[in-house]
Image (cartoon, rainbow, N blue to C red; front, side, top):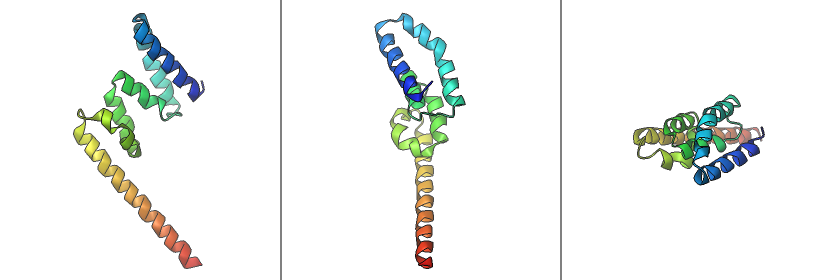
Length: 117
């Protein structure tokens, strides 16, 4: 299934869920399989997986997802607060440190390029 299709399926299920409470049972039966599929595909679409977790209030999985991708903390920290305040703080520190290292490496590479000219 194309990543675009996942988004459409999720939109339809969420819309249908709000209109028909019987769909809630259907969603909960497919929810674990959808997550497994996205995880197996290594999160081909980086926006759908966290969106599902947010919609379902699965904050522990969202936290794990962000811990593996600290650069995503800016986009999702609001959903993790106040439940994971300490973890969010630690993720921001890690993200800032990684950004500083990347910037330093970029500057070093640039400096080396200038030396060769």
